[in-house]
Image (cartoon, rainbow, N blue to C red; front, side, top):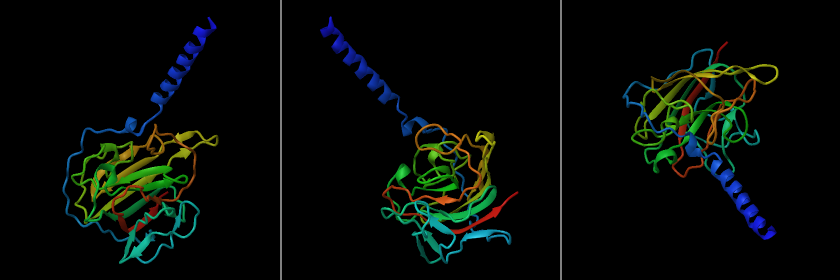
Length: 260
């Protein structure tokens, strides 16, 4: 009898381990591939001068307003010809603003290199984290990606609130052309015990086209798993140095206006 029970126990244990592994969340679980947003063309200029009450985060001269996310040392990305370019060297990583924000209006311009290679998520990938709540990719991400004739999951294309909100349209321009995001960010509010009182909302214009209309976020934007809220008060704005192998993106003309 004991000889029979032992292999049965091993079989049950192996089945349990297999079930746990198959139930483990995967990135694909939260990818949405349809409906595909309509392509919209708009040739309006993307550059908008900062208003008089704006805080200029990057004016083309230096990175005085930015630090490395990892250790808060001076930012190590590249500044040349009024342009900020991602540094993909090992150990550099994401950068974030020295100052923290709550509710604000943000303007940022970005460009995918004309020589970009790769496809899908490995083609000009970066992100604007509207609230950087920790190291790595913690926070609330507005996706930056080449979405000009580049197929990927629609809740991960340019203009998406990553893995949550599909853009209402795709006004993405060709690689090599400057593009812009204009964002109204309403930060979440938490109760004293850390529970959520009111959620975060984001309105996004991509090249002057509305792509997110006061969208209510379900929590932080995650690569794997369902979004959740973690209590915070104010947070920096973060730019992502993505780990794909394609040529690095560039940014310029970044400013923010704090709102009541």
